[in-house]
Image 1 (cartoon, rainbow, N blue to C red):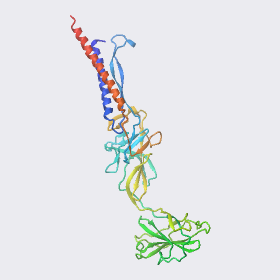
Image 2 (cartoon, one colour; image 1 turned 135 degrees about the vertical axis):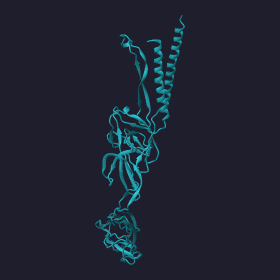
Image 3 (cartoon, helix red, strand yellow; image 1 turned 30 degrees about the vertical axis):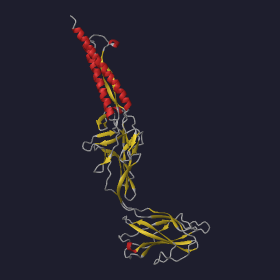
Image 4 (tube, one colour; image 1 turned 90 degrees about the horizontal axis):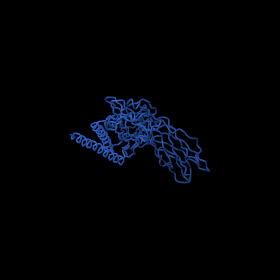
Length: 421
């Protein structure tokens, strides 16, 4: 190899060290970038072509070059943000995003998402998060990739009350009496209120009175105020339903068969809706020698509700929370994985694109098929090891100095050669 060739070998060393320093500086610059994956440089030697038949170990090298820049896809630390739409993958997999204007699909470990003005779940660049959508009932998942959208005007339809559950204790020492609808408070030993809902989701307050009519026997009467009944008079109760409860004289336990009919009257609510059949279950009700008191009360109806927020479960399910306290599944975040992660192409903003080298994406639900879990309210931090990057920086700096020394030494040798007379 000629003396001049040493200059080009050293130059190749300078170029590779410069590239390596660029990679190190990129890693250090992104040490606080969520979802960033550090990169490392791999070098290889360059063998010069022989002018003769020289080959094998006597072939002369002419420097080095960058063989590849490989990504480090190890898990980064999860940092808590307490923002429901911030997501992190704890394990394998990438979030799937799509550019709505070009339909180009991207993959990322950065889960800093939010809802845009159209309700789409998007990243900071506006790419839409992809997932599987639930049908309108929130029960059936359609396994076709689609934009995840939260319809801010969506509603949960009301449900009419059909079942009432109530458990209470009735004072065994209460005096017997005869219930009078004209004086319900004065002819009962205990009363409690219950809200029910009609088919339109309108609420109606029912007052239930309990009157001891004989030893171990109580009568209950459910009433509704006349202002809430067509043809009724405000302040005048209207009978909604009635029944009897019998108790064991020794244990105080309820012996009446449950459930029974709660609605036994003939009522049309003031909103024009007719009351429908309702069952009541007093299972757990007792007659002990202590003050009458309600223990549990509930019913299965509810009013219509509008969406008030979302939560995202570990399996990626996006759940809508509604103003009436109900929840409904909206969508499920999908994750993608690849056979060769180093074949992914960087696209900036922590985004990757698939390539022939990476292989086609493999889609799956979180926690299925080896995919990781989704942590809501968290973000994955950069996996850059700052100490390791500083060590690499020192090594590359010294290598750069060594190659520079070769050039200066070669220059001295060439000067001496030119000075020969």
